[in-house]
Image 1 (tube, rainbow, N blue to C red):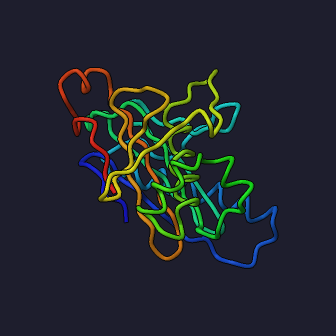
Image 2 (image 1 turned 90 degrees about the horizontal axis):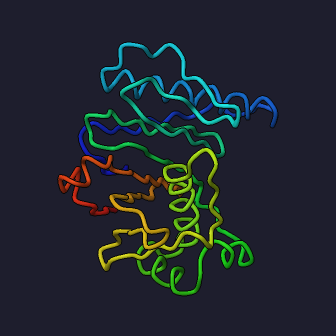
Length: 207
């Protein structure tokens, strides 16, 4: 599972199988909200009865918390952070590592990114790039912003740690894990006051 700092949690739920496609989408939506409520409760939020949505369907978390919801193929997860953690925004992506076709893979990452991701994640490299960039979109895009995959450039250290090169944003941490043929990716954006103080984790990124 993901290594996350204090004050940040990842809650993941499995959905029962057998639903029709329409029912499955509704079930994933409900499970994502349930995961968000569980994450809020685990961080001490007193009001967890509901997580509202914007017109675009993005979750709205209670004051003092931020979060992101993701689901894919029978799983749903929520990444939730308390403001005390030093993060102003987070983004999550849960992605079944089923292999990305070559045309899509070229759209998601350039050759240099894909080579670096292969050294970090092997056969799941293209799935990892997809998931990490989706997490960045959720964490960094404002209401009137939108990124394409080509707008986001990533690099990887020899130990697999991922870093955001473009767009240029201060205090963005990327974290990822692959297990059970599922990629889990998180982008954590430090609050401006935390960046100025050299925290919450000095801009480092972790596998």
